[in-house]
Length: 153
Length: 153
DNA sequence: AACTGGTGTAACCAAGTTTGTTACAGTCAA
DNA sequence: TTGACTGTAACAAACTTGGTTACACCAGTT
Image (cartoon, rainbow over all chains, first blue to last red; front, side, top):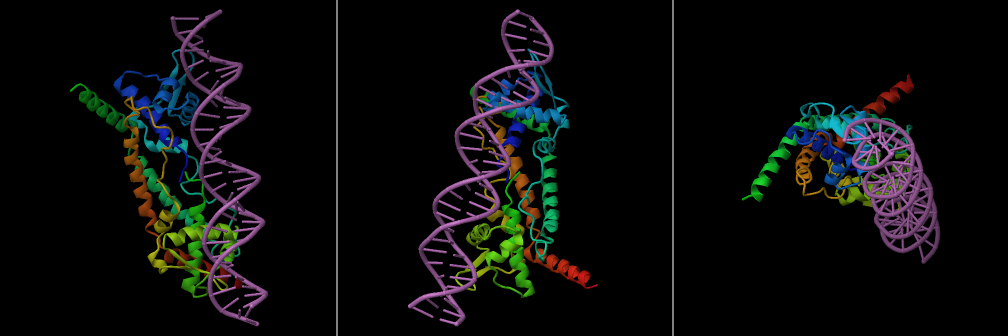
C-alpha cells in the first residue's frame, strides 16, 4: 500500500489544531510547534498544511504571531476530508503498461478490477468518514487528563 | 496509496490461470504467455508467481512443458488471498520518526490512528473476500463469448 | 547424451517517490 | 525596523518499483 506517511502526519497535525481549539489553549499554532510534536522539520509540516489549505480545511496567517487554524469546527472535519486532500488517486494502482488487448484476459481485466477497487475505496471512505477531528481531539484530551492524574498520584 | 501495481498484476496472472483451468484449454501456463498478456517481462511474472507459490496459491512445474497452475480450485481462492500474499503491512503507514512522546498529541495519536487503520483494513478485506477467481474467470469467459459473437456478426 | 524450452533467482539500472534540509522572499505586529 | 512567522523552490539521500540480462537448474524429446 501507500508507502507514504502523509496521511498519518496530516491527521497528527490536524488533531493538534483541533486540540488547541477545543481546549482553548491555542487557536493559532505555528509550524514549528507542530513540527516539534510530529518530530520532523517545519517545512514538512508547512507542506502538508499547504495541502490542507488548498482543500479548504485550514486557514493560515502570515507574519509574526502567525500560524494555522482549522477553517471549520472540528466536528465538521472528518478523517475522510483529510484523506481525500492528501491522497490522490485510488487505493490500488494499475499503472503498468496496458495489458495486451488481443487476449481474453488483457482486454477486460482492468475494467473488472476497477469495480472491485471502487468498492474497496468506498469501504475505506465510509470508515474514515466516521471519525471527526472532534472525536480524536476529545480522546486526546481525555488521555491527557488521565496521564496528568497519574503523574500527580 | 500503494504506488505498486503488484496486486493488479497478480490478479491478472491468477485470473489467467483460472481462465485456462475453467475453460479446460490450458491447465499449465508459462510465464512467457502470462507476460504477453500482462505486457511485461517474464521475469516480472515469475517474481509474482514466486510470491503466490510461497502463499500456497500456485504450483509450478519446471522443465520443458512446465508452467504454473492454481493450487486450489478457483472458487477457493479470493482476491483477499492474493492481496494478503502480495501486500505486506497495513493500508496506511506511520513510518516517520516517532512523534514527540512528551506532548498530548504525540503520546497517543498513533495508538488512536491504529484503531482507525485496523478498521479500514478490515473493510478492504471484506470487500476483497467477496470475489473469487472463479467469479472473475467466469466474467472473463462471458465477455470473451460476447466479443467473439460480435466479431462473427 | 544432447537439445530444447521451461523455471528460480541474483544482480543491476533507470525512474520515480518520499522525506528532510537549506535558502530566501514575502508578510505582519510590535 | 526588527523579528517571527509563512510559502515555496531547489536539492540530496534513501528507498521502491519495474524492467532487463544473466545464469544455474530441470525435465521431456529426440
